[in-house]
Length: 133
Image 1 (tube, rainbow, N blue to C red):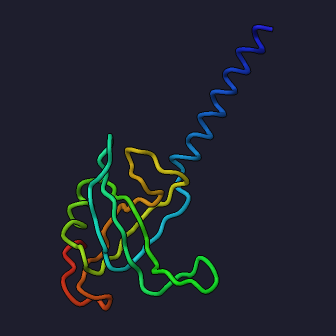
Image 2 (tube, rainbow, N blue to C red):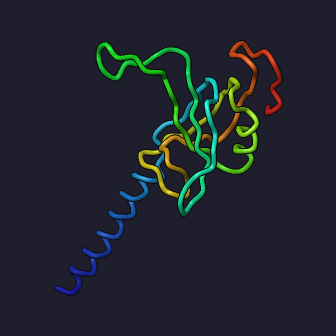
Protein backbone atom coordinates (compact mmCIF):
# COMPACT_ATOMS: atom_id res chain seq x y z
CA UNK A 1 0.00 0.00 0.00
CA UNK A 2 2.83 2.38 0.82
CA UNK A 3 4.30 1.94 -2.68
CA UNK A 4 1.02 3.06 -4.33
CA UNK A 5 0.82 6.17 -2.14
CA UNK A 6 4.34 7.22 -3.20
CA UNK A 7 3.53 6.66 -6.88
CA UNK A 8 0.28 8.60 -6.47
CA UNK A 9 2.05 11.54 -4.83
CA UNK A 10 4.70 11.65 -7.56
CA UNK A 11 2.04 11.56 -10.29
CA UNK A 12 0.07 14.30 -8.53
CA UNK A 13 3.17 16.52 -8.35
CA UNK A 14 3.92 15.94 -12.05
CA UNK A 15 0.33 16.72 -13.06
CA UNK A 16 0.14 19.88 -10.91
CA UNK A 17 3.47 21.10 -12.31
CA UNK A 18 2.32 20.53 -15.89
CA UNK A 19 -1.01 22.30 -15.30
CA UNK A 20 0.74 25.24 -13.58
CA UNK A 21 3.18 25.60 -16.47
CA UNK A 22 0.38 25.42 -19.04
CA UNK A 23 -1.82 28.03 -17.30
CA UNK A 24 0.87 30.59 -16.43
CA UNK A 25 3.99 30.11 -18.59
CA UNK A 26 2.85 28.52 -21.87
CA UNK A 27 2.88 31.08 -24.72
CA UNK A 28 -0.56 30.80 -26.31
CA UNK A 29 0.10 33.23 -29.18
CA UNK A 30 2.60 35.76 -30.49
CA UNK A 31 2.06 38.66 -32.82
CA UNK A 32 2.31 42.34 -33.66
CA UNK A 33 -0.19 45.10 -32.85
CA UNK A 34 -0.09 48.70 -34.00
CA UNK A 35 -1.93 51.81 -32.87
CA UNK A 36 -1.67 54.99 -30.85
CA UNK A 37 -0.20 54.59 -27.38
CA UNK A 38 -2.87 55.98 -25.06
CA UNK A 39 -1.04 55.61 -21.76
CA UNK A 40 1.87 53.82 -20.20
CA UNK A 41 2.45 53.66 -16.45
CA UNK A 42 4.16 51.72 -13.69
CA UNK A 43 1.74 50.42 -11.07
CA UNK A 44 1.08 47.64 -8.62
CA UNK A 45 0.91 46.88 -4.91
CA UNK A 46 3.67 44.36 -4.33
CA UNK A 47 5.12 43.95 -7.82
CA UNK A 48 5.48 47.23 -9.75
CA UNK A 49 4.92 46.43 -13.43
CA UNK A 50 4.59 48.55 -16.55
CA UNK A 51 1.05 48.63 -17.95
CA UNK A 52 -0.22 50.35 -21.08
CA UNK A 53 -3.06 50.73 -23.52
CA UNK A 54 -2.86 50.89 -27.30
CA UNK A 55 -5.85 52.32 -29.18
CA UNK A 56 -6.20 50.75 -32.62
CA UNK A 57 -8.13 52.08 -35.60
CA UNK A 58 -11.68 50.92 -36.07
CA UNK A 59 -14.29 49.78 -33.66
CA UNK A 60 -15.33 46.51 -32.11
CA UNK A 61 -18.80 45.61 -31.00
CA UNK A 62 -19.16 43.40 -27.93
CA UNK A 63 -22.94 43.33 -28.43
CA UNK A 64 -25.25 44.20 -31.30
CA UNK A 65 -25.81 47.93 -31.67
CA UNK A 66 -22.98 48.98 -29.35
CA UNK A 67 -19.69 50.53 -30.41
CA UNK A 68 -16.49 50.78 -28.45
CA UNK A 69 -12.94 51.63 -29.41
CA UNK A 70 -10.56 48.79 -30.17
CA UNK A 71 -8.14 48.80 -27.25
CA UNK A 72 -5.17 46.55 -26.56
CA UNK A 73 -4.20 46.48 -22.87
CA UNK A 74 -0.76 45.09 -22.19
CA UNK A 75 2.12 44.73 -19.77
CA UNK A 76 5.71 45.46 -20.79
CA UNK A 77 8.65 43.11 -20.29
CA UNK A 78 11.87 44.66 -19.03
CA UNK A 79 13.28 48.14 -18.57
CA UNK A 80 14.48 48.47 -22.17
CA UNK A 81 10.95 48.12 -23.57
CA UNK A 82 9.58 50.39 -20.82
CA UNK A 83 12.07 53.18 -21.59
CA UNK A 84 11.12 53.14 -25.28
CA UNK A 85 7.39 53.23 -24.54
CA UNK A 86 7.70 55.98 -21.91
CA UNK A 87 8.84 58.38 -24.62
CA UNK A 88 6.13 57.30 -27.09
CA UNK A 89 2.89 58.33 -25.39
CA UNK A 90 0.36 59.67 -27.92
CA UNK A 91 2.37 58.41 -30.89
CA UNK A 92 1.81 55.55 -33.33
CA UNK A 93 3.70 52.42 -32.25
CA UNK A 94 4.14 48.85 -33.46
CA UNK A 95 4.60 46.29 -30.70
CA UNK A 96 5.58 42.62 -30.69
CA UNK A 97 3.80 40.68 -27.93
CA UNK A 98 3.26 37.27 -26.39
CA UNK A 99 -0.08 36.11 -25.02
CA UNK A 100 -0.22 33.85 -21.98
CA UNK A 101 -3.35 32.09 -20.76
CA UNK A 102 -3.22 33.80 -17.34
CA UNK A 103 -1.16 36.65 -15.88
CA UNK A 104 1.26 36.26 -12.98
CA UNK A 105 1.84 39.21 -10.61
CA UNK A 106 5.54 39.74 -11.38
CA UNK A 107 4.96 39.70 -15.15
CA UNK A 108 2.08 42.20 -15.13
CA UNK A 109 -1.67 42.53 -14.82
CA UNK A 110 -2.38 41.54 -18.43
CA UNK A 111 -2.18 38.25 -20.30
CA UNK A 112 -0.52 40.20 -23.14
CA UNK A 113 3.17 41.01 -22.61
CA UNK A 114 5.00 43.33 -25.00
CA UNK A 115 8.50 42.02 -25.63
CA UNK A 116 9.73 44.46 -28.29
CA UNK A 117 9.02 47.91 -29.72
CA UNK A 118 9.27 47.61 -33.51
CA UNK A 119 8.52 51.18 -34.56
CA UNK A 120 7.54 54.57 -33.16
CA UNK A 121 6.31 57.32 -35.48
CA UNK A 122 4.11 60.40 -35.50
CA UNK A 123 1.52 58.79 -37.79
CA UNK A 124 0.50 55.37 -39.05
CA UNK A 125 2.11 56.08 -42.44
CA UNK A 126 5.54 55.91 -40.85
CA UNK A 127 6.20 59.66 -40.90
CA UNK A 128 8.70 60.65 -38.27
CA UNK A 129 11.57 58.95 -36.60
CA UNK A 130 12.13 55.26 -36.07
CA UNK A 131 14.89 55.24 -33.45
CA UNK A 132 14.16 51.78 -32.10
CA UNK A 133 15.19 49.51 -34.95
